[in-house]
Image 1 (cartoon, rainbow, N blue to C red):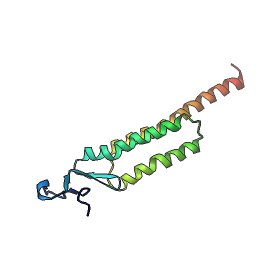
Image 2: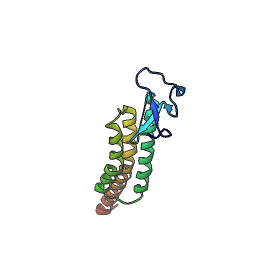
Image 3: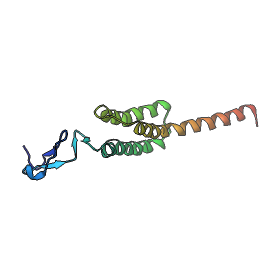
Image 4: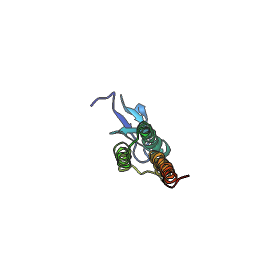
Length: 131
């Protein structure tokens, strides 16, 4: 066992002190396979979901400037967003507020398309029938 990398998280009502464990750290939050576990729900949600949503927003903004088709945008969301969120949501519960925030960050990619299509339809209507 690597004593330098070993972390201990108390389960239940146990209170652990570092002096009771030689060469081990007692932590309030622990990371296992990329997911943070702990008792403080706000801190756990911030580390697991808010950081992930920031990463998703970044990757969506990189793809937003490209003129992707609707199927291309759906593929981007399935590849970069849904997989990251579902991995974490399958292990720990996700609050409704975080679901709404995730939905809003995903619809940014589609909003520009809808606006562009409406403008295109509006312009085509006046070109077809004369203005």
